[in-house]
Amino acid sequence: ETGVTQSPTHLIKTRGQQVTLRCSSQSGHNTVSWYQQALGQGPQFIFQYYREEENGRGNFPPRFSGLQFPNYSSELNVNALELDDSALYLCASSPTGRLNYGYTFGSGTRLTVV
Amino acid sequence: DQQVKQNSPSLSVQEGRISILNCDYTNSMFDYFLWYKKYPAEGPTFLISISSIKDKNEDGRFTVFLNKSAKHLSLHIVPSQPGDSAVYFCAASGMSGSARQLTFGSGTQLTVLP
Image (cartoon, rainbow over all chains, first blue to last red; front, side, top):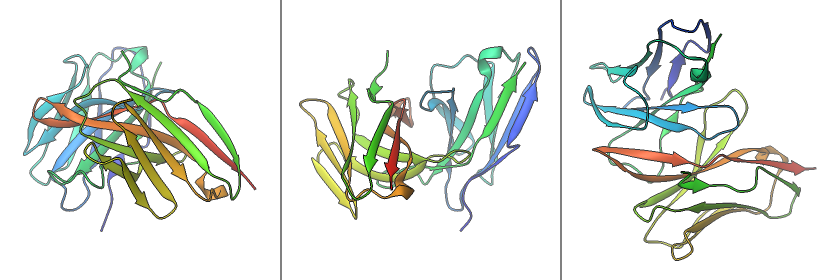
């Protein structure tokens, strides 16, 4: 059983550019969530996808957008990058309704905006 | 507005002793609580969870206690081992639209000394 894989692991972008981060869900998991973890803080919920639709969003502006594909893999897109977008971006997958063992997280993509 | 707080950024414990990590929350709508462990360069790993209708859940060396009236939970690790050294995040689960969202604390760095 494969876990959650994210690519790339590290990325450096310039302010104003656009970035796409990718995530492959754990086998059997149909729900994908994205989190942003700034330095010294806990992960913050960006949004969640279920059946290729966004079904919940945290306090993030519209320039953060996503996609989920029929194989449940997902992308996070960030437009007009700002310096404060520098963070670790984590993808988490879960089978719907299964809370008792939590979400499975990937190792993350470290984004640096300069 | 931090809905989940971990007030101790760090904790050092001697090997074999008990480690107690604490977490407070403000939102009474949270219905599930989870603890995650995170090593550097890895994503958070699920450790243990507890439903809001319970006050204790045990899994091997790990026990989580929930005090709903005080909006407080704690993770006990007995006995502590050097391999337990990591950042521990408390997370609370609740609904955001149709999505189940995790709200994390800022983490506690646990160091178990040999």
